[in-house]
Amino acid sequence: MSINGATCRRASGGVTPETQRLLLHWRDSDRERKLFFCQREAVETLIWLTEVAPKKFKDDIESANLEANPGLYRLACKMATGAGKTTVMAMIIAWHSVNRARRPGSRHFSDAFLIVTPGITIKDRLRVLKPQDAQNIYQQLDLVPRDLMDAVLKARIVITNYHSFMLREAQEVSKLNRQILGGREGEKRFTETVGEMVARVCREGGADLMGRKNIIVLNDEAHHCYRRKAATRRRKRSPPR
Image 1 (spheres, rainbow, N blue to C red):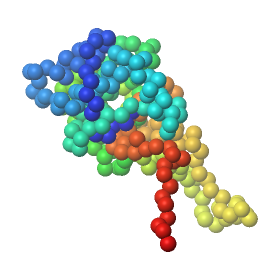
Image 2: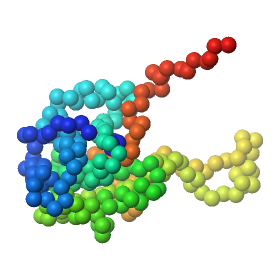
Image 3: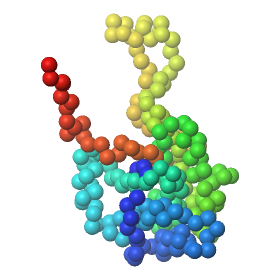
Image 4: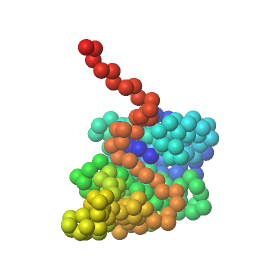
């Protein structure tokens, strides 16, 4: 699921009672901190696609994803700069967590989240998405009714940045020893495997996602999410001589 700046359809029926409570809570006219219409409509669109009409567009969405990411089901919210994407991510986490707590066997909802940011600075700012944080956004903006907050507290949330997916040196070995061990083939590298990298990333910040199924990945600032396959891009023509 990519967060990049909103489609505007509203969930109007067919949602769970917990989802309905959240929708009414977010639209309450007596709220001290009212949410932007684009924030509500972005989440309402995802709710509508997930709970109200999951079959209507499922084939179309899977077909579109197949072109660039086979086997990876993605939905994107395109929002303007300054519209409040962090709040939208918190609303998504709350929606999933509350429903997952009431329906642990449902495939539609999850309580495990991997949040990917473009850099360390934004990663630090998004710590407010962790409900255990003293300045967590759920309480600061009153995103969750008090009696439902326990479900959000049980969510496992890992916040990382894109660079964490780069393979690192698994062992510290001097250059001389790498040359000796590599022999004629050159320096021997002790780089971690993809599996080791995944295990490392999924355990960042103390929240362990290893072994969890149905993990929701929130890709912040996903400006690349609509790129076509490399094979379909037009090759640059060399200038005429």
